[in-house]
Image (cartoon, rainbow, N blue to C red):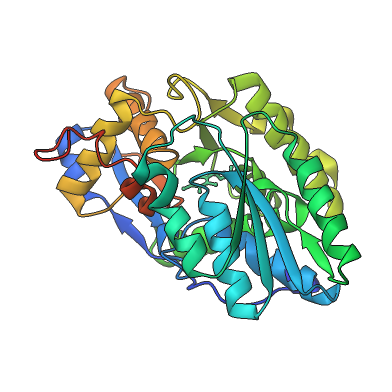
Length: 337
Ligand SMILES: *Cc1c(COP(=O)(O)O)cnc(C)c1O
């Protein structure tokens, strides 16, 4: 498969490292755990949106855009990486942030991703919870067009068939890395939200016939709904790539929404444990909204005996650690009550 048919810019630090989690594997006494470091993609403290943005921003430039619009939750990692990519390419960037958690304390409203959005020169406007964010973006795009601008609208999470190509490519990259070191990957897990990461990975793994199953740990929607969202985007991505839609079957898309807790962006005890465990055993930072809940799912599945001893389980770290600074009080640390 030849992804060079699609326009792409190169600003991510690739390939990202694939590292063993030796101390945690020993501590949990289960399978061999590995981590794929997509928190190290290079742009503005990294994260999974950067791979998608290489394809999305190339399409924007190809279409003659001078202004980028996107949306996310207040502490959106996607909005932050989009502001950074736009800065790098000399594009104006407007982001619409939806108040999905109802948190308005100083750290949540102004630190973490929100601070970085502004350092990258992004214009932020806030929207209440449950706004129709696509309609809000279209409305803003029309205003900008009326002002003579050429806006390019990126959907939430960068999750359309163009953005998903970034994770088709990541599936190739990871499989190649494993082949180079004769590592047989038995399972691949990651946090899944707007679905582009999982859809791209599933398409890439199936197109290569890698035999590596992809397991999404949900952070928002219920299992069935999340799987449908991923499957739908996988089908559209196959179509976009001129591949047979039969390459991905419905049962190739697996999500587990047991670790969401009360809702999107709301802390859980198992997430706090996971963040502390990776920080204190491996020196690696997760985040409270996505990778922390994803890794909490992995820990629980290991404890329940879901994986066999000797199997190799890769956790794809999708980034987001700057949002730790938006939640300084949830870790029960001295001086932060
Ligand atoms: C966006 C994001 C995800 C989820 O990826 P999707 O492609 O939206 O499913 C996971 N982790 C982090 C840190 C993210 O920012």
